[in-house]
Amino acid sequence: MNDIHFKCPSCNLNLVIDSHSYICTNKHTYDISKHGYVNLVLVNQKNSVNPGDNAQMMQSRNAFLNKGYYKTLAQKLSDIINLSSQTNPQKILDIGCGEGYYLHALAHSFDKTLEHLFYGIDISKSAIQLAAKRKIDIKLAVANAYNLPFFDTTFDTIFSIFSPVSSTEVLRLLSDSGKIIIVGPGEEHLSGLTKYIYTDVVPHSGNYHALDANKELILQEVIEIKKNILIQQEDILDFLRMTPYYWQVNQESKEKILELQQLETIIHFYIKIYTKKQNV
Image (tube, rainbow, N blue to C red; front, top):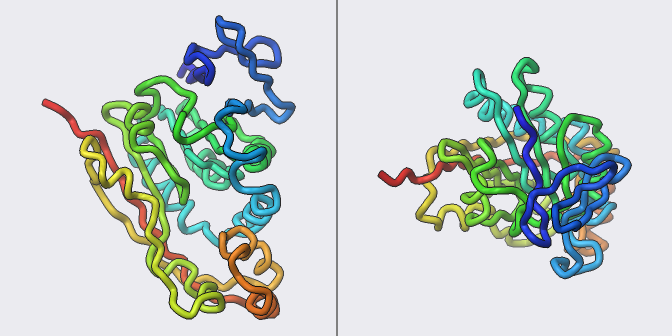
């Protein structure tokens, strides 16, 4: 299967590899890092110097996920995508791929005789750097989910876990027979943690609203995952740091959480699968 070409964020032309850079015919040039990823976020597209999750948050997420606490979600996601790709090579994009845990699990679950193509983007440079260090055959770019650097109808499967997405952009990139898979938190997600932080816990709203509201998409299936996990003391700090709660919790509650010998909590996810509306 031929590689998918990145699109130049400056002029929307095709980018090709020239030595250690991506370059378009207008000579816009984007260097490939020593780890193999490319930064396709223009300076005028940034809302801060280093947009996205910071290095500490990503390192903690990397350490925590590598312990297998969310393995159930990774396995289910792999099963869903594998079902639609048992005989045909797939072009797969992870929007908001973070440090690459789910892409890594997915790549290792596939039939190696089929030449699947895996791509991951994230606005956080720290995240993409960690994903690149996993040393798997995945094309990675620092890129904005609301201005994706790919051409129309490129991907068979687009998925996103806990990350904001643009329904317009995913529709543009999805093949006519493709699937969009969105994973968001359920109402009880991390309730064993939030009880130490809030008196009244407001249920998570999820990240599906833009897709649910788009009349060009059809919701095909909703899959729920709910499981109790027991987090060991040495992993609690990483667990807390990888969530937004680390920046919201007061010092007294933070100390109480970090003194726990173990933290028991529910992990609760909804997986929503969408397809394009077929106009007859």
